[in-house]
Length: 217
Image (cartoon, rainbow, N blue to C red; front, side):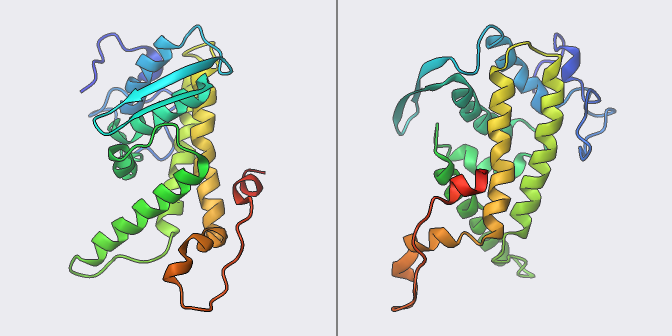
């Protein structure tokens, strides 16, 4: 568990607490996600989101190096920290933390997220009662909850730091919480072209378009 002895006021549970937070102050004096964000905020106090950095990520499986804006590097860190923070609203993303791809593109994020959710539905379908469903309503609900969470986190950070590095990183993370549901409403039609070999022979496949740019717009 994170140390709360020297944690700042903005990490307390009731400080700009998420409107849908299921935690109670009697059991949790501090927001588990805010406690883990504290170290990042302290580390990047004197930085700007547009500062260019060279990021090197070394894991047991691979080594990744990329030059990018600091806000993107921090956003990639948050994508790993969010799911394992102890926040009930981010726990659904734990599989993505286990198979985290540092500095992934928006397209890779959409693919990994939808794949994760459909695999969860498969596991549910193997249980008594067969509750797994091949639809994305549940994933949309998860991302709507994450959007609510990101708004509250951004409010916490207003008094936590003057630097915009972490604040803008939160904005990038939140982009996915609004981007993915928007793409799902379009049934990910553009991704069908990658799955031509799985479809019946002769079935038309819509050509790829720049759907990510259209969705973000």
